[in-house]
Image 1 (tube, rainbow, N blue to C red):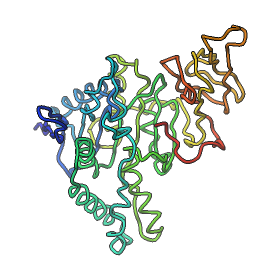
Image 2 (image 1 turned 90 degrees about the vertical axis):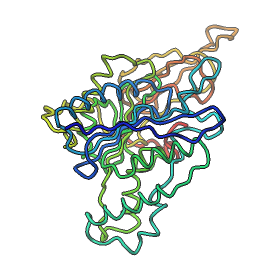
Image 3 (image 1 turned 180 degrees about the horizontal axis):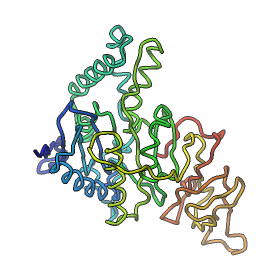
Image 4 (image 1 turned 180 degrees about the vertical axis):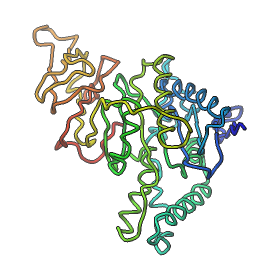
Length: 381
């Protein structure tokens, strides 16, 4: 028997004559098994994620028709209809809310802070009972939220869909990049199956990246409460939550998306959410390192980026990975400023737009050891 339902969640209207909504695909029965929540393109101009979600839904539809859904699955294939509609001078501007709300994937609420005081005298030594109690408290808290504008209504709707999931996957892409993954150290190496399924070339571990990103709402709930209440009161790490970076902006093709959707489907089989044999795990193609070990290479001046190191290339600390060229230089021999790597490792992101301003990120290099300047907010805005 098919279990799929389709729903539409309206957002608060920002103006007369304007109405936006989320489309939600649901499979399985609540409480029947593990719950997976998957959303695509919270940064609405990161198109590869939506195409992957499209292909994943097709696979889940077939699995549902075959009676293979063992848990509960919620897929939001376009998680940001606000950003989908934002264009400036013909260019899609889906990363920041045009009304002044900032980055769509920053400043999400701290659920542990929201429910911690109410739970202080209730959690005990039974991790299963604590998990149920915490989820009930969070569910009540997000249900009680009253959004005051369209952006808040989007955030509240997504929180209500995802708050009780065992697995949360937030699908994104970078500028021009290899596939990589953000996880908390509390889910490593237990999350290695996800990294190997998707072919993560760099798995970046941080308990708190400093930006209050969507994925950390759900993983952070559990490790923050565990830290607050101490080891004697057993708080499980009950949600594997990750940001999956599906290469770069231009990597939009059915061939790539079908492969990524197949990898995510097999991961759901690994976790018992979908029945069937997922096959053996692929060999790891990248390492897991602290997010503080990533060298975020920035432009020291404005100009044209001419890369010396290719995407995926291994570099050594001190290597000149790029030059910034001043097209207005009077002496062409002095027009170039080299930019050097601070660590050794593969270059896993570069920049598609080759004209940069001072401070713009031009590359990221996956090192192994924390870098002294990588403190505080570890994410780009």
